[in-house]
Amino acid sequence: MQINPADIPAEVQQAKMRFGIIGNAPALIAAVSRAIQVAPIDLSVLISGESGSGKEFFPKIIHNFSARKHNKYIAVNCGAIPEGTIDSELFGHEKGAFTGAVSSRKGYFEEADGGTIFLDEVAELPLTTQARLLRVLESGEFLKVGSSTVQKTNIRIVAATNVDMLKAVEEGRFREDLYYRLSTVLISIPPLRDRGNDIALLARKFASDFAEKYRTPAIQFDDTARHLIMQYRWPGNVRQLKNVVEQIALFEAGNQVTAQDIEPYIPQNATIYTPAVASGASTSIHSYENEREILFNMIFRLQREIETLKTLVGANKQQSAPLLDVHHSTIHESSSTLVKYPAYNTDYIDSGNNDVAHEINEVESQDITSSMTLEDTEKETIRRSLERNGGRRKATAKELNISERTLYRKIKEYGLE
Image 1 (tube, rainbow, N blue to C red):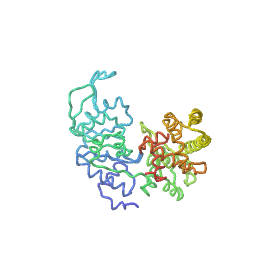
Image 2 (image 1 turned 120 degrees about the vertical axis):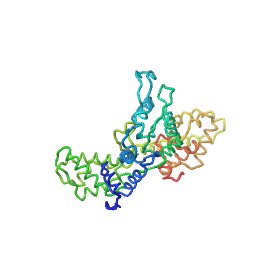
Image 3 (image 1 turned 120 degrees about the horizontal axis):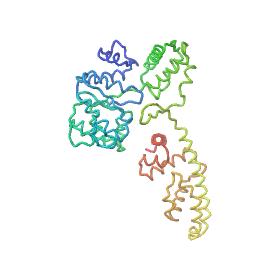
Image 4 (image 1 turned 60 degrees about the vertical axis):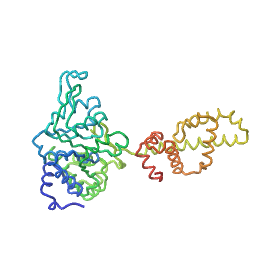
C-alpha cells in the first residue's frame, strides 16, 4: 500500500525533497510527519530502526524544523569511538588529564551549545558514559575529563539505535533511567522490505544517480527484475539496495536488466541480518546453518556417549554396589569427553559415584535411546540446559555454544517457553 503523493502534507513533501527521502510508504510518511511535529518542542527523541534503513535523515529533519536550526548540528557515531576516549570526545578534557592530553579540548556537548547532537548507535555507550549523559539530560551540566568545574550546556539530544533497547536494559547493558530520558518521543523507521513499491522507486533513483555521477549509460529494469527486487527481503535495507544497484549499474551499463541479471548480485541464503560491529562501516549476512550443523553433530556424539554409559550401567546392575566403585574410574574415563557437551555438567562427573549413577538412571528413565528423532534429542538437550541454568537464556546459550537468537528460535520452535 502506498500513499498518493497528492495526499501527503506539504511540509512532509518539503522535508522529503530537502533531504532526498524517496518513497510513499505509510510508515515512512508517518515517521517523517512525527519528526516534523516534535521538531519545535525541545524533547529528547529516540529513533529506532534496522541498520541501513535511513535513521540518519530524521535527526536532520528535527534540527532543521526546530528553533535551533541556525546553530550547530553534530552527529556522533558512538560505536566508532573507542571506550577509552569517548568521554573526552563528548565532554572534552583538561590539559594533562591523561597521557597525550597536551592541551585543553572542547567536547561535542560544549561545541554544540545551543544546537543539536545526534548520538547514533547510542546503545554502544559504556555504562560510565551513560551516567554522564544522564546528568546532561537532567540538568544540562557536565564535567570535562580531569576537571572539577561544572559546565552548563543547552543542547537537544536525538539518539538512534538498531538494537532492542528494552532487551539491553533487561541485560544490564543500558541504564533504564537513561532509556526513558532518551525516549521521550519514539520514532520507528520501517525496514525496506515493508515499504512496498518504494523499493522499485529507490532502485531506479540509485541507478539514475550512478549513471549521472559516473557518466555511464543508464540501465533499465524490466518487469521480472522489478518483481525480484520487490520480493527480496533486503536484510541490509536501503544501504544494501544501493550497493547492489550500483554494482548492476556498473557491470550492466546501458542494458535492459532482467531478474536473471540481478540474481548473481543478491545473496540467496541471506535471511537474517547481523549489524556490523563497532565501526558500522559494512553490512554482513549471517546464516545459522553452520551453528545448526555444529549443534546436530554435538547431539549425535552425545547420543553415542549415553549409549556407552548405559552399556556400562547395564553390566554393573548385575553386580554389587561396591563393584560400581571399582568401575567408577572406567565410567569416569568413558565420560571424560562427555563433559565437553552442554547436555551435562562436570559437576555430575566429579561429585561422586552416586551422582553418576543418578544421572545415568535419569537418562534411562526418560527412555533416551538411539531411536529418538534428531529433533527430540535436540529439544531434550535444550530443555536440560535451561533447567540447569534456572531458565536463564543467556547462560544457556553460552553453555550450548550457540547464539542467543538461535536459542530463542529453538525455544519457540519446540514450545519450551
